[in-house]
Image (cartoon, rainbow, N blue to C red):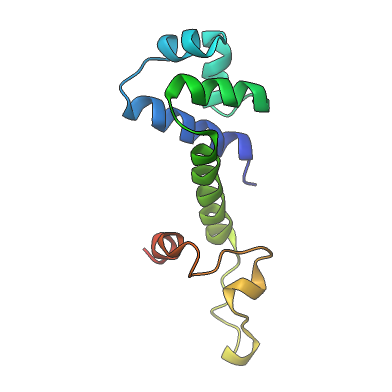
Length: 118
């Protein structure tokens, strides 16, 4: 099962590491304990919206960007977990947008389709 908190933690950690910042720096700026931030990054704790906003502020990244990255990762994980329909006759196969509720159309997020195809 795909857990939102794990994907969120991965994105937050990646952003922090990409900036070359330590947990201590970000936790101080976000006004959250180092241990709690570490648990959020490891996907062990669910972060509240207030905490997420504070962490994003400390990282200097809009919350919308973090949520967009999490959404893209979630879509990829869902697609990778979808059952393979290779044995089904072509006429019985549905387009991806019909098989995954709320799936992303190619025109909206072409990079997601490219990442799945790789």
